[in-house]
Length: 117
Image 1: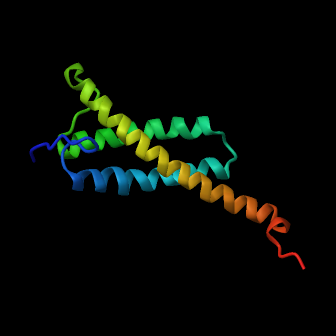
Image 2 (image 1 turned 180 degrees about the vertical axis):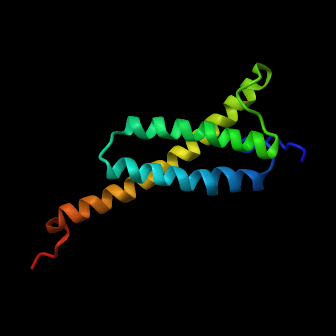
């Protein structure tokens, strides 16, 4: 597979969609939900997403011959696509956190959404 080296994806669009958006996005959504469910802060979400980003970069590297953070010759390219993956995964994590937190608030403060008569 020859790399396309676009701004958002390194090898191909399909690889980016499957690995980063479907697999990574689903896991990031679950991380966001779990941080909201355990009432953890945003720092724990960012830390979890950073670890997930490293795992997703490894999947890009091992399955589709993308770049990884080692050797040092490919560090700049891997850092660029790692930051892209981090931002995308953080958006999915924030969405998961927001949905779980809104469900918690609706359940806890049910009287706020009651109709006034």
